Amino acid sequence: MALYGAAATVLSGLEAHQGSLKTLVYGSRFQNVRQLYALVCQTQRYSAVLDAVIRSAKLLEAEKKLKPHLAKVKRCVSRNEDLLESSPGAAQVIQLPRFVRVNTLKTCLDDTIDYFKREGYSYQGCASGLDELRALEGKRFFLDPLLPELLVFPSGTDLHKHPLYQAGHLILQDKASCLPAMLLAPPPGSHVIDACAAPGNKTSHLAALLKNQGKIFAFDLDAGRLAAMATLLTRAGVSCCEIANEDFLSISPSNPRYSRVQYILLDPSCSGSGMVSRQLEEPGAVSPSQERLHALAGFQRRALSHALSFPALQRLVYSTCSVCQEENEDVVQDILQQKLGPFRLVDALPLWPQRGLSTFPGAEHCIRASPEATLTGGFFVAVLERVDEKR
Image (cartoon, rainbow, N blue to C red):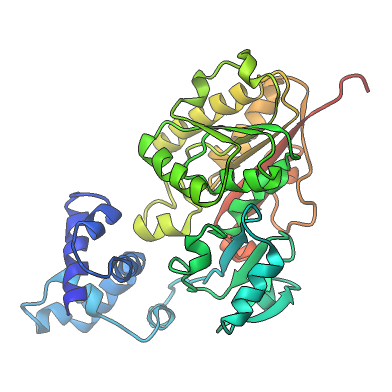
């Protein structure tokens, strides 16, 4: 009962704009914050369905002392899917697998697989496709067919307290979020800019690809997120990264410090409309206002234009965790039309099933990701490469 009461208090605080979901959960002093956070997120996600069920059952009329938010969190069924199926026209929830990137700065794939096998997990080899991943359950796990160091566990697998995660041997990272660093593919010894770096998962991935040989210049304006990022990178064994609490737009491309930068990863602030966790916390996040999209797209264009002005740049990856065309295809199209140097769109991962929206010629070279098509969070990636003008 204490859990339900705490969840109802958090929901009331959210409605009264007393803070963010995480702030209210961690400020609740409830002992199991992970359990509380999960319950509140699920209640938020199915809020419309729960309201309909409560009204239909006339629950508040029958239980006069029951508050609306408490009624919501107590109106339980055995599974969330059962609740949705009981509501006509409700959308089916897509359960995403737990993707786990093996941090090759600290361990190797074979040792990690052996560790899990000793713990009683059954390794199924390389997955042949999405159908196998959808059917994944129990203590079984696969190797992802595309990313060579990515393991795939059943949905709901919680490894936050696993010793390999706590030692930095594992990075809990959605498959779509692993694509930018993989597609940038800087060889060891390269100089790389991670333009909007926090919280740092992609930065640690870049360092692993570099084998800690070379240099990563990581920028972010949020000092708090950078502090958390520094902890993450230390735990992951990253030693080739310089973190700066600076605005990437204020960095001069003519500064000699960056004269050898040939690779830039630009994952700018975005609406987050493709993030499953954001959708759980903020049910309206999937449809940001046009005003917000306009402001975000303006910043994204400026950041992309600035990145393309670095003189030694050879390859750039632009990515967002947004599903909105305004932040994705529209930004890339506008920059290409400005002809900011001899850059072209690369046909990224030709066999990837979901392509960019057909809003301009070549948009199919970009890739999109979604729970429905790729069993990942919503994502967008475009790869730009310098063209040899002598040819």
